[in-house]
Amino acid sequence: MKTGWQKRRFFLAILLVGALLPMIPAWAAIDTLQRSLSTSKQFVVYCPDVRLRLSVVSFVETAKHEVLETLGLGDHWQIPIIVNLQPPVSTDTTKPLRQINLVQTEAGWKVQVDVVLEKGQLKQVRFPELILRAVLLELAYRKHPPVVGAPSAELPSWLVEGLAQAIQMRSSGGRPNAALFRQLIDSGRLPAIADFLKSNVEAMDPTSLAIYGTCSLSLLEMLVDLNGGKAALARMVMSLGDAAPGDPVTQLLAHFPALGGSETALEKWWTLGVARSSKLDSHLALSVAETDARLTPLLTLSISTDSKAKTAFPLADFKSYLKYPDARAALFAQSNALAVLLPQAHPLLRPAVLEYQRIVLELARGKKRGIDEALQSVGNFRGLIVERMDKIVDYLNWYEATQMPEQSGAFDDYLRGAKALEKATPPKGTDVISKYIDQVEREFE
Image (cartoon, rainbow, N blue to C red; front, side):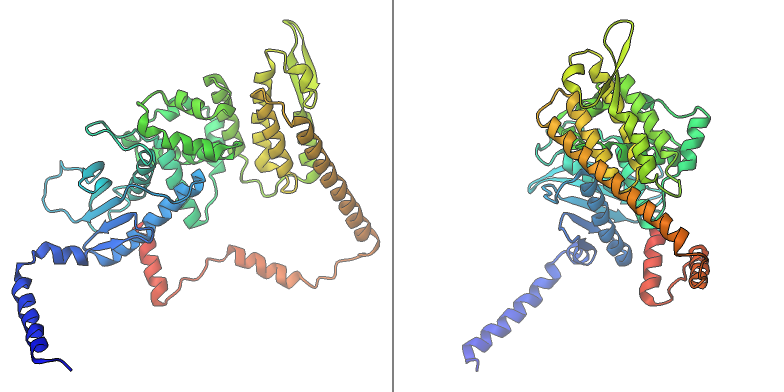
């Protein structure tokens, strides 16, 4: 039970709060209502539209997850990212609709993303690409704070566009546009890798931008698929903050030695990779036998031993051929050929193809330690898979020939129903949650 003095203190406190409330600035109350924090607490989103703000808070974490997953990094952010989405306050059309800056405050550095946004304009301002740039910028300066007054790091446009395409494909369940790659190759309009890396995204029309984004995703996937590709890409991004802008071809070759160390080798790798992408819509992977048949010639290298002739060497005979100057180039070429085979290989033999590519790259770098054992191990694995698959095929052929004189037809109705479902458009939900999800998807279309 309160004493008389305690009661007087209680009422005095109420009177004091009542006297101070008019002194609190109006923006402080609005700020509390218009501010949301993402789950990782790296993003602070300001927006007067609560539904849009919550959608953005969810999306920024999705974008960051895509970047970290692609680079093989954990979420150890150091610099907060402020996203400010506000309606236009003037009719001045010269002001930029979006901008991103590194800003120094009393609390430290932050990445500031400002977007002037009218309803339904997320697509027009290319909001996903803007957030991806913010995440990559934080990574570039995570270990090395920026120098005051210095320009921000120049982020590779192909990396931003490739990541944006990856997010879009994952959300829509789409597949790489193999037909587009075939058209680029058949028409001879595939851009040289140097020209592609230097492309100005801001000057592109929507069609050119769509083609550039698809090619960017292909390049990104090709780099990540290289042995140690994720780690190399992560090192490249995290070095952007302390390196002066340079030639993008040189930059790529410096961080990916597997590309051969020259623009000519890079161009060949790029062309082979796009050719591989043009075949990604094949309905089935190669069989084990077909994969093994395609793999066998890739385990033999043709190396110049003098000015007139070339000699064929088994991959395992590296002690004989590594002394020749042409060996390194031949090994890099074989690595590219293995990279082309990898996505087409039967799933059971893909680990073997990947291991052979790793061995080839190790030899190209002059590293011979443990190679004999690795070749022996992968050879045993490959032989075991081929042998067992041959026995399975033989057994199935025998069973079909001797035990199944005719098909029962028991599953015909099921197969017809499954094919019909594949072609049918999935029904749209009519509940409140489904409607909200549809609205969020439309915001980011």
